[in-house]
Amino acid sequence: MSDNIKPDIYKLNLPADLKKLSLKQCEDLCESIRKMLITTVSQNGGHLASNLGTVELTMALHRVFESPKDKIVWDVGHQAYTHKILTGRADKFHTLRQENGISGFCRPDESEHDAFISGHSSNSISAALGIATAMKLNGDDHHAIAVMGDGAFTGGLIYEGLNNAGKSDTNIIVILNYNEMSISKNVGGMAKYLSQMRTKESYKRTKGAVERVLDVTPLVGKPIKKAVRGSKNAFKSMVLHSTMFEELGFEYIGPIDGHNLEELEAGFTAAKALNKPVFIHVNTVKGKGYAPAEENPGEYHGVGSFEISTGNPDVVLADSFSSVMGKELCAMGRKNKKICAVTAAMKYGTGLQYFAKAFPDRFFDVGIAEEHAVTFCGGLATMGYVPVFAVYSTFLQRSYDQLIHDLAIGGIHAVLCVDRAGVVGSDGETHQGIFDISFLTAVPNMVIYSPSNYEELKLCLHTAVEKETGITAVRYPRGNDKSVYSKDKVNSLYTHYNNGSRTLIITYGRLFNNVYSAVEILRNHDISCDMLKLVKVFPIQQDVVDIISAYENVLFFEEAYDCGSVSEKYAALCGNVASFTIEGFVHHGDSDVLLDELGLSAEKIAQTTEDFLNNET
Image 1 (cartoon, helix red, strand yellow):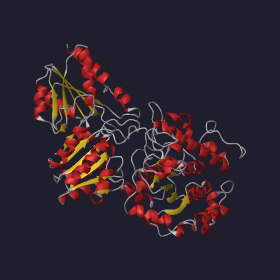
Image 2 (cartoon, rainbow, N blue to C red; image 1 turned 90 degrees about the vertical axis):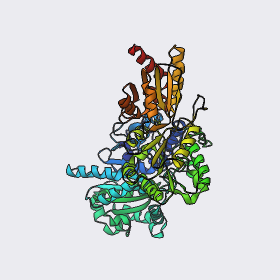
Image 3 (tube, rainbow, N blue to C red; image 1 turned 180 degrees about the horizontal axis):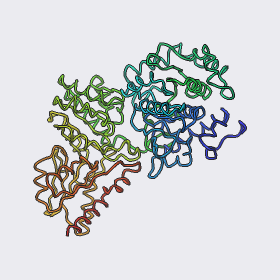
Image 4 (tube, rainbow, N blue to C red; image 1 turned 60 degrees about the horizontal axis):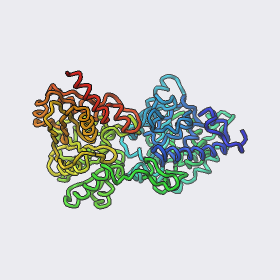
């Protein structure tokens, strides 16, 4: 194919045909992919800046390696959109994060080119090492490649993986995509170390080193392995010394310009030829090719739909449970100098930017390190401070040992603001916040609040900080307050709507809005139901047990996993509670559609209740 003929991504047999294209054609293809990324994410939402930064890197990977025989493990997967496009999913890419469409993260059940499931940070090296070890045991000389952003280096699991991988004698290649950003700006000693490596003068000689390697390492024709081994001096000029990665047992290559296909392919080819653990440092620009994302990569890490010409998002983020929590905590911080706010690389996502600006000395971003965050909170608390850790439900899972060992056993007072609790929608299985109720209620002396509107959220936050004495979780959903019911009955325990019916419907959190609407639907069908809105959902309240015991029919609808749910606990105590929860993992799609599929929309709750009562009679 002539250099003048631009390749049509929809007509290529990908990824195999990439090896047949010239560098110029691949550069044209990268330009087309960037346009596809911007167009699709502007309509569907998703991770934009991180993916714009890895287009050339991904192209070079698939030209040098042979997926799926070589296994590419993407850390988090929020930078793998180009990988999806280049592995036969270009024609489906417009369905990204949509119902029945392709996932926003890597899923082995979606494609054989997705070597390992992804969604949470810092696990790629450990997974890739397991794959590389299995390959070695099988006598397979293909490679396992872990690709991560520098934000992942704030997570402890990365170092456990590095420590084992470097001395493993396997064909594992670790690629660091360094762009100085994760979700919030990277923090800590490792971020400073990597930054120094990027800017140090002796590390800016990559281009000449790559050219020397290319002189003796043809990309096509001669045996690459023999050529590299026979040109030790030329290759050594590309391998940097005195790095922590070499101390761990890796050969180190880089830094490489992450937007230069020729340099990338040379570096990857050299690493492939070594057949030992290799660490490759690649420098990229997050948001590359789209000015608003380049200028504000944090804001364009994960976005809803937006207008391409202006970059303006459709969603007003100030109107959200996260922002309301952040602003209220900031107001509380002005009165109580002992309140500290902690985040794990989610300052803007959790609404803590307000507190961070007002009280920088009492705000702590620990990076992608939830385990450390919880134990750090424990240390603060022992010195008389009140730590408030704002964290997504799905990421809190990673700190379970610390919750029990470092907080609960010692009776330490810390507040967990559990954001994105319940169904979150388009991010899919790895991000749905449906398990926090199950694992938190198993921790002794845990207290859990689940407000259903902004007013209750503020009240619960005050109660958790000012009145509780142990670990207290305040869990709330993604998005804004859509409640249609009267909010004149606001307290931190429960509200009983008693109309004299023999049937009671119970729920908590944002789901009460659907229950309220469902009761209206049932009233139009001449079916009367009382309601019980829990706010303090755990531990079990005796008053609630007494209320339940007075009813003939009790239905408990819950936006949480079935095993370990609150409704399961009340059913065990009361006996007359029918539990309607979530079973198994929840796929990606629109939140309202997913809730309907799970039987938790107003219409489905009404139908389930009517069917239940008909069966009872």
